Image 1 (cartoon, rainbow, N blue to C red):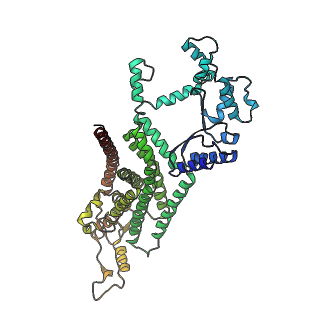
Image 2: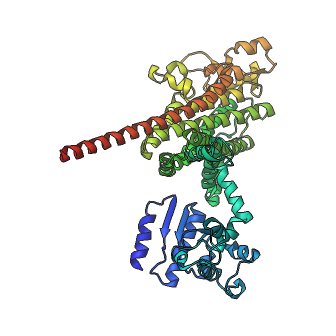
Image 3: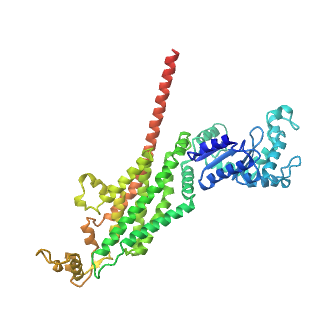
Length: 529
């Protein structure tokens, strides 16, 4: 019993995605068996692991833990596959009883099912009789070789069996629907063995990823609450009161709010998805090696599965920002801000996938991701003016996803027409910024002249100051549209590069295996001769 528990513990150390166990309760007492099965049930339900096990004579409490049940008769034929708790009803509905096996007389359905299999194990089916040309009930030689049970006829003629075949057929791809004969059918089977079509694969991979992301509902709720809380803290830091007719501070507050909340949204994405890629990596490589997985389906499924996270994060971050901060609440500009952040987060997710495909070390991927985010944040044109960015970091201004995202958000919020000022308000603002008004005999800033756009509008006519703020930060007119197009192109580019990286790594691994095989063969031949 102790050895059995230890062997199970060894398998769980690396938390495999699929766990296959052969009689894990063998040699254990009833209480220990139930404890082990409870643990396996928890792995399946709460940690989204697939657990497959064989078991004999499970007690009632253990049987109730099973989701699906496969019954095999003597000789390995399939007698039932489906909902574990619905097995008894299936045989009762089909009036399958033998030698007094009545399910209502059993407290534990597992005992009734095992007795039913034992009673039917030597009774040949009508299918067997037709194929072998026998009449009667079969002979001893047939019994010894494992008769095809009458249960097989019942199962294969059932609606549940036909539904199962349709599901399996939907996961195959071939030149016909499986009804052809001879060579056409063989070609279909050969194609089917290569895996499902890319549409089906994309859907299956998306479902698997999405279910795993949403499996820990409590954890996801905590994460989203954290996103809201951090956004509130950022907004609170930049909602301080300013003096009357301040022409500069509100624009500065909006700029810093959008800069920080968009950067924080980027951080949340790589904290979620980098571990996801590494958790599923071994399964993906095994499926690829077995010919069941298409790389393009895997990459596309990543895009589809990650988009809901980008949508929800964008809604939470911008929703809280518009509620708590004094941003440009015009509906058109607010909707466009959401589109900008959504495309930016999607492009950032695509880059995360590319980086995750390039290395087998999660530490390396985290380092690269953080460096790209940091460089884009620092040299994106806000914290350091474009004129002062070192030439070797200019690339970050033009192609960094974080930089393009926050510049487009700032342009969208400031350009029109929330922030206005008159010439008099501008002079009051300059007076507040430069107190005392006269330093070392220099110019008295309280009498500073107004900018040209204010002079043209007149002293008391308010003018939109957004373009002036943007010009000071070197953020020109078409920036938000260029940024949006560039980030949309990056989504495609990064996903294609991720495919190429996976293909290149697979090719390199294949070459290494072939070289190793050739070296082994050379040693064997040298030894023999």
